Length: 309
Ligand code: RIB
Image (cartoon, rainbow, N blue to C red; front, side, top):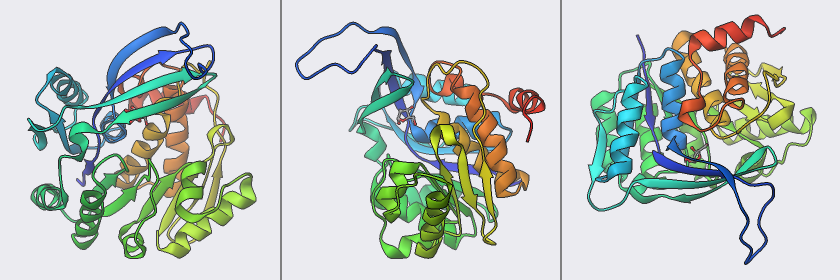
């Protein structure tokens, strides 16, 4: 059976909630501090594994206690970490997260996430990949390494899923390597110049991204759900679901992307994967933290029973 390979970031998240954003020079009291495994790449890998896909992680962490914890937790989630590199040259990536008014703001220390260059990413991928596998990349690793991974994956016959977060303009030729680009509103503006404000502008953004070269697009719109266009040009609009009180939106997007990648392995259509991912992310936001908030396939299936589509 095909598998998912994630070339991506692994961060220790230091997360705290505040009533409001502090002003410059101001100190305010926070609450609900937690240290927990995150990183967009590792979160997406956990989502893929919990949703039933065989998943490999290609990444680097420092030779430190955060690195030890991140690898142990990822393995416990069922992700193959045999190609996660330990480097003495950098410390493990860290994300400082401020949760405020139902949303979050994140400051990253990339650290070891930039340790793998293009040749290392390509070599690791060639060792583990087989035609029909899915490669998932984001924007938290070395940019050239990410481009190289997507290019070699495309050449090897993998299905390439790209989440441009943080967003950065791609060289024109790189779009041809992407089977599915999954992004939010601000990333859409950065990648194609269209900031979706409603369904019509979201569809326009999808078409613009397809004109750039991505074969399919899934565009997330926060509380307004998501809009997608598949490789045949068929569009889908999936409303968000409310499955309880929103506690923490960290890793909601990563859960959704993990469902899209696992959906490819399962042979789901883009629209089916979007619905699956919407419910999975709807569960994630009702829980605190990143990887620890991501549900299993059984939890998603149970929640889907109660969601009218
Ligand atoms: O998408 C959420 C993730 O972004 C967090 O877990 C944090 O590590 C940052 O990478």
